[in-house]
Image (tube, rainbow, N blue to C red; front, side):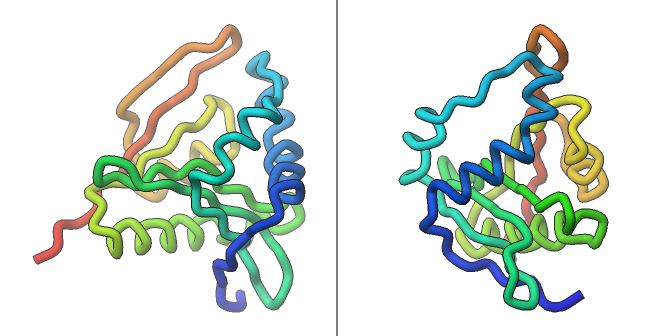
Length: 149
C-alpha cells in the first residue's frame, strides 16, 4: 500500500456525507437517528483530516485534545477501501499525534456490533466505559500512550 497521508479537511458537507453513510447501518441497528445539527456544531472544535492514498480520499479522521487525552471522534474508511489495513494505519497516526501533543491516552467510543470494534481491540484498546442504547451498547475504549523518558 502507498503511504497514508493525512490532509486537512475543510469540507463539512463531504465529511458529513461520509460519516452518515458509513454509520447508517450501526445507527439503524441501535435505533439512533442522524443528528445533522450536532455534527455541524461539533465541526469547528475538532481536527479533521482526510485519509489519502495515492492522491485519492480513502477515509476521514477527527479528534480533539482535552485534559491530556486525545479523543478520537471519527475514524471512517470508505467501504471500497476496507480490508487493506487503512484503519490500523490511521490509528497509528492518531497515536503518533497524541504522543506529539503530550497526551496520556487515546479515547474513543464505538457501538457494539460495529465493524470497528474488533479493529480497536486488535490495536490494544481496552474498554473503560459502557452505556446502553435500546438495541445495544456504546463502549468507551482507551489506549494509554507510552510515557516520554
